[in-house]
Structures are given as C-alpha cells and as structure tokens.
Length: 540
Image 1: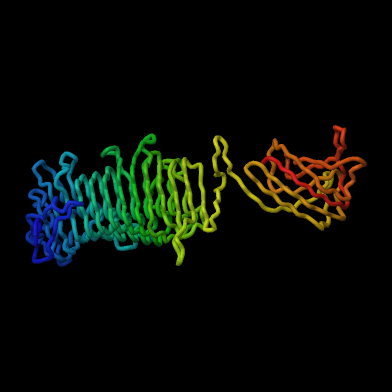
Image 2: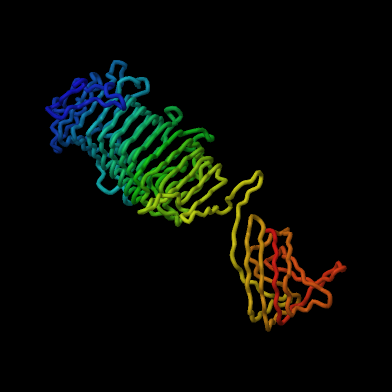
C-alpha cells in the first residue's frame, strides 16, 4: 500500500492532507512512550510529552499517542523557532487523551513563535486526540470559569489538518491565530465556555461537522488585536455545524478600531444543526462580551462582507432575545444571502433582527407529510428598503413602513377594516341611540377611502353637527372629498344639499349645506334624529 505506515500493529494510517492523499505522508513514527510517558491518568507526563514535541519540532515525522490518558501540569508547545526546524508534523492520537490542570495559557500550542518561521510547505496534522481542561462546571450555566485555559491553540500555523479532535472543559476549546489554510473534520469542542475562537488572520478555513454543544458561545469570530494583517480574516466555512445547548450560537464581532474598513470577508454557515440555544443563534456585526451573553452588543464600526447561511435544521424557540440571525443596527454587514428552513414565523419580528445592507433573506417552511415544502416566507432585503413575506396561504405581506418601489415612489401601506362612526355636536358632543352605525375603510398608500351608514334618535348634543370616529388620523394638510347619497331628517333648508370635508385637526367630518349658485355654505346644527349615508377619501 503506497504511502502507508502501520503503527503498533494498528489500523494502517493513510495520508489525508486536505484533498490530496499523497501530499502528506506519515513518516518517521515515534511514540510518546519512548520518551517516558506513562498514560495512566495519574503520572505527570508533562516532561515526557514536551520532550517528544521538541523532537518533533527538530525532526518532523509522526508522533504516536498509544491509547491512554496523559496527565500534564504545564503548557505544551509544538512550535517552529528556527529556520532549520522541520516543516511536517503529524500527531496521531489513537483515541488517547491529554488532560491538564493549568488554568491559564494553552494546553497545547502548535505553529511557530513568530511569522519569521511561518512556512507554507509541509503542515501539521492532528488526528484522533482528546484534550481535557480544568473546568468543572457547565459552561452553558451561569457560573464563572475557573481559568482562561485554551485547549488547542493554532498560532502562526500553516496547512493545518484536524480530524476526530475533541476538546473539553476549557475556557476556550480551540483558538486559531494567523492559521491558514485549515481543514477540520469531525472536530468537537464540547462544554467549553467558548467552543472555537477564530482570532486574527484566520483565513481559508473549512470546518466540516464542527461540534460546539453546551458552550456559552459556540463560535466566536473576533480579532483581539491587529498584529496580523490588521486583524482581518477571509474565507471561513462551517459545513454541518452542530450547535446544541449553547447560550449563544455564534458572534461575529468585526471590531471598533477603524473607520469602517473591511474586517471579515466571506463567512458561510452551511446546513447547521441548531437546537436548544438560549438566546440568539448568530449575531453579525455586534460587539462581544464574555460575561453578558444575553445582551446584544452595540454595532461594530468595521464591515463584514458576504455572509451566507444556507439550509440546516433550526429547532429554535424565538423571542425578543432569541432570534435566528441578528444584524447590527448600523449596516455593518454588507451583502448577505440567507436561505434557511425556519419552521415557524408566527413571531416574525423575532426571527431576524435588523437587516443587511444589500442581500437576500429567504425562509422556507419545513415540509409536512404530503407537502412539497413551498416557501412559507420570502424576504428580500436591498439596503434595508424592501421586505416581502409569503405566508402559507400564498399571500404577500409587507412589513411596516416597507413596500414596493415604483420609480421614485414607494407604495408602503395597505389596510382595510371597519370603524364605528358617531354623530357629535360642536358645542357639546352629546350621545344618541343608534339603529345603524357602520363604517368601512380601505387605505392604499397615503390615501384612505371610507363608506359610512348611520342612523340615530334622541341625540343630546348641541351646536354644529359633525361625523366622528374616522379610522386614521388625517394629514395636517389633507385634501378631502365627502359625498352624501342619502340624507334623512337632517334640516337642510329648501333647495339645499349636504356636503362636507375631513378636518385636519382630528378624525371628524365637518358638515355643510349649500345650494346651486351660492358660494357660502351653511353649517347645520345637530338634529335629534336622522340618518346619513356618505363616502369619501382623504390624505394621511
């Protein structure tokens, strides 16, 4: 078998560097037990493990951890620090565990001591290894961590491959800083306060089946400094991310140090599994704080370009503090394509908060038995100006203040319903017994159309007569028309007809009588009994 090494009569290990099987050969295998490591979970193996890592730095090859639990009390490093150091490292865990009691620093730090020793050839592969830290309480609860330990830190590391790596009970499970390219396959960071932290220059990273359950923050994308490439990161993909039982799923904090430059570009979440998250699933462009996960931070000043969230299972309970995706309120997210099957948009305002500056959001219902999975809700966001929603009835609903734009004009309101008209006196409003009191209206844009049918007896009001109870307050400079089709028992005078207009200081219609050939109308006094039918329209 070409490019294959058998270790301790175990299953053959075949090179699997990213997508090229022949690129990274497992060679020069050595065992940590050759350096005195015991692996019984009791003996302190710190010195032995560091000696083995030091050998690997100088000589390269494959470091084997026979099954067992290797206890450490000091930080371990596997870092290039000289021009002559090796460029290919393989750690084959064979299911072994490194357990550490350190409460600060990194249990295992891999890469280089400075960018001078960063190499694009060779690479680092870590497989089938578990790292356990000192934390003892649930990271998803309200307690505080005992330390700031990082389980696995990839610092100035090139061409990293992780497979079947698990990190447990640390402040931060896995942290990358100037680490690229990187491919993680079936990596689990469970029960850590921060599952995975992508710090500065975390570029060209692909995480397949990443698991971050039971964390306070499943994923944190945030540059803690601007040492490397001004803290920028590009091209990050999470494929089948499993986020269950987290307090917050993911925060992308693009920072506040600049004047609106591009901090992150091209971040994708494809087919995630979302379940049991306490607060928001993904926050984009909001500032991050460790101690208050329930609070959405203020908007960042740096931009995030090209965010994609596609498909997945979203088993999430939505509320005012628990949304699917939260965008900052200052348009820091420039360009987003969101296409996700959210089962219910009954509380639509809580599914998405704010909107990206340019992009598309599509939400689809979960197909039921015999259902073809038609779109339940469709939203299109372009600079935050247009949102459409298609409900399961097939109708389109426009969000408040949003609408369809025709040239320079926007149709942003439509409403229809009923209201209860009344007859009121100007001097004293009074009251009456109504045998008919019906009002219907339709609002299209800034125009309200109405129809009124009203009949009364025993009115106690005095002074000029008005019709009250219009459904929408008129514009201060409204232009209106009122047409009367039937007038019963209202004193008009011989040869007169009834007309009126909508007042701009309330929700009433002023009545007036006039006759052909006269230019001055007369305001009629209230009638104790009568009936009116009219229709009209006015500006709002």
